[in-house]
Image (cartoon, rainbow, N blue to C red; front, top):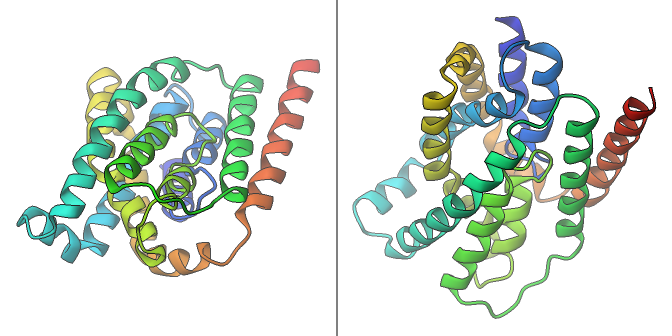
Length: 244
């Protein structure tokens, strides 16, 4: 149980930072937990931070549910459809990546791509619907361990006319429908992940406690350099594993 609690704590912290919580949790899971697919565990633990997003943005969700915020509702519908269409085949490709060098290489590649996103953020005159498609596409691809969901969607959202202070809110809220769908799929195909419920609880508790602080923190730190360095370290680890 302690192993799952540690995984949940990591998820509760790193989900709000654009450095790929899935990649980090998948790597940790591959070393801490035996007998459960590391990618499935990493995706399943998003349930805890999903609950944190629902609680933290409860007023915004109320506006969406009551059809008062039609702009957000339209964005969520389009982004979710695109995310699921792209994310499912991507998940099928990466789910059975072997633990070790291969997983390190995939995470390293994803982090380098995330670093590129951070370095090239520019604002263009992109319509809201196109922004929804771009963000949904990037969110779907973020099922690949190492490719940060928040980092890539923040990049996509920054291309449009969404106010800077709203970008993080859009990024976190758009994760909810996709996380619900992916968690349901994982529970049906690999029900053993339910053993990770302590991690879901700890990720929710830590997530709700750290969300506000880390949202402010993520606006200031240079994550391009962080993800670049961590990505290179993953490649070095993969190389050592292949040569060993």
